[in-house]
Image (cartoon, rainbow over all chains, first blue to last red):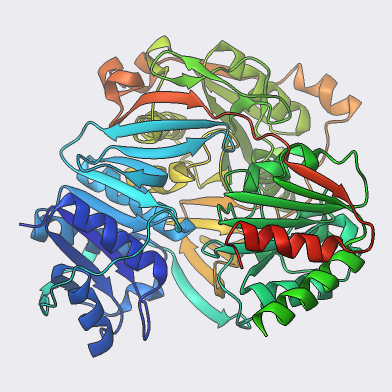
Length: 317
Length: 267
C-alpha cells in the first residue's frame, strides 16, 4: 500500500525537474508509487528508484495520448485503486490540473490546485487572488488530489537505490469513449531555453521593448533564464503567446524575475508577484512596477540589459 | 443549436480583493462579469449567428451561479448579446468548492435540457479571474459524461462534430469531439463585442430564469461548505511587497545590476 501516488506523463528520455520535485514531496508523505505513461527507459526507471518509488504503474493501452485528458484521468483513477494511495500528486500544468479535476470527481476526492507546499498530513499551502493571500487548504475526503507548482522544493534522491516493481493497470474502456480526440499535433520549435513555468530565472519584456526582444534573449541566455512577455507585447505580435506571463498566460514564481519595459499594471503584477526577487528596468520612474521591485533601475533597457549581459559574461568568463 | 455559456460574477481585479467571508471565502463586493467569460460568450454568439440566429431556433443562454448580485453577470451577458439568462441562486450554495459547483452546474444544465431541447454545447472561459483553478470545465464534463475540449483558440462546429485548435505546451493540436461537449476558450479565440445602446435596451426585454436548488433537484447537503470536498483552513493577507532600492542609470546601471544579482547569489 502506497501513501502517495505521483503522476508522471510521458517524460521522454529523462524526468523533468518538476517530476523530481513531486517525488521528493511524495516521499515526505510516506511510501511512494508512480503512475507512469509513455516509454519507461532504463535511465528513467533507475531515477524513479533513486527517488524512492517502490512501484511504477503503467497503463494497459498505449493510445492515451491520442485523446484529451479523459482517458488519462480514467487510468489514474485505476492506478489510485491499485496502489491504495491517499494522496495523488500531479504537476500544475493546464493538463495536470484538468486530469486532477476529473480524477477528483471519479474518486469523490477533494482537489487543490496551484499548491506550493504540502505538509505530512496532506494539508496544502497555496497563494490565491494573484498572490495577495496565502491560504492553507485540506481535502475532507479519504483521498486528496494535489497539483503542485514547480520550484517550491529542492529535488533530493532517497539515498537507497532499489529498482521499483512495475505493474500494469487496466485502463477502463469507457475512459477512451466520450473523450475529445487529437486529430493532428505539431511540435513547436524548441528554443533551448528553460520552460517558462519552471524556470528559476525569467526575463520578461513589455511595451517598452518596442518589438525587439534581442537584448532580453541575450541576457536570458547569459543567465540560463526563460523569456517572458506582457500581454501588450504578445498582442503586438513581437513574441509568441506562449511567452505571456500573467492572468491569461503563464503564472510564474521564479527565484528571480527581471521585468524590462513593463509598466506593471495590476494584471501583470498578478502573474509574477510571488517571485522571490523582482528586478525592474523602465524609463518611466512613475511605473507601478517600481512599487514592488526589490531592485529598480530608471533607465533605457537597450543600454542597461546589454551592459549587464557583457558584465555577466565577463564574470563567468 | 442550444448553447449554454457559463458566466461568473467575480471581484474586479482592478481593485484589492479580500478573503473575509464564511469558510474563508472571497468578498464579492465590487464584482463584475469575469473578463475571460466574454470570449466564451462571443464564441457562442458567432456560432449561433452563423446558423441563422434565434429565428433559426438557435439559443445562447448565459448561466451564472452565485448570490443575488451574480444576476448582474447575467444581465451584462444579455446586453452583450446572449438570448436569455439563467441565474442559479440559493443560500446553501455559498462557499461551494469546484466539486460542489460542478455538481450544481451539471444539475442546472440537465434542467435546461429538460424542455425537450438538450444542450449541445457548454462554453466557458479558460479560468475564472478569482479562483483561477480551471477545474470547472473538466469537472463538469466528467459529471455530464461529455467530452471536454479545453483552451480552444479556434472553434468550428460542423454537424455533430466540434473541431478546435489549441496551443498547449510544446504542441499545437487540432482536437475533435462529438456534441454535446464542454469547451473552454482562451483569450486568443476572438475579440469580444461591447454592449451597444441597442443591446442594452434589448436586454431589458430578455428573460432571466431564476433557479433554486429545489428546481434542479439538488440537496443543500451536496453543495456549499457542507458539500465541498475541500476546506480552506486559513487565509492570511500576504504582506504587500515594498519597493527596494531604486537607482537612475548614470551609464553603469547594468554593472550595478550584476553586483546586486551577485550579492543575492542569483548569478
